[in-house]
Each structure stands twice: as C-alpha cells, then as structure tokens.
Image (cartoon, rainbow, N blue to C red):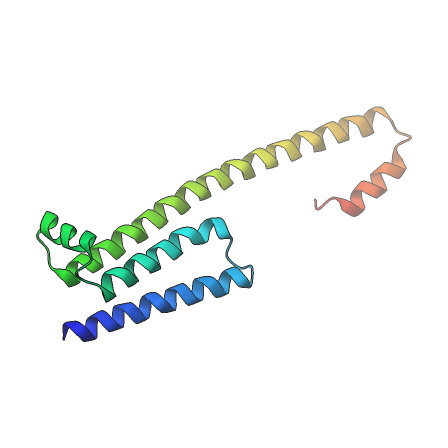
Length: 134
C-alpha cells in the first residue's frame, strides 16, 4: 500500500514539474515565480521516492508523524510558502497600480489646465483624444 502511495505522489510531483517547465517554455509563467513551484515539485519527488532520506527521517522524528502525513505536511508548507510569496507580490502590484493611477490623474489634470490656459492647443486636444483611454 505504501509503495502505491509513494508512486502516486511521485508521479504527481513529476507532472507538477513538467507542467511548470511547459508554462515557463510558453512564457505563461515567469521564471521568478516558477522557482517555488520547481522547488516544491523536487522536494515532494525526493520525499516520495526516497522515504529514508535523511531530512524526512529527521522530520518524522522531530514531529512524531509518519511518512504519508509528513509528505502531506511538507507539501502543505511549501504551498503555504507559495501563497505567502504571491500575497507579497500582489500587495506590491496593488501599490504600483495605485501609484500609476494617481500619476495618470495628476497628468490629466495638468493637461486640462494647460488646455484651458492655451486655447490654441485644439490640435493637441484631438491628438490626445485619439490616444487617451478616457
């Protein structure tokens, strides 16, 4: 029974690695974000195929949980790390989006003030209407 579980977990980790490499190849997943997925797949593969691995035995002795629970817990911890990493990235992107929206609003305000002060800028007005999304 344990052999079947080991092989199944090993096969799932190989599938995870292959899908990650394919997404990198197709440029749908950036390399900087794929490192955690690759590390997770490799760690699960090592723990599933070599349960006597030194680190897994240490983990079992340290926590007192057995092989299958240890593999599930390790996988959960890696996925938790990935979710935490993406939360940091999303927070950074949210902040950057807010800054860009504020800069855009200020530039639009400056443009409107410029247009009101210089009525001969009608040509600029039509050009800006073509490129402005608003």
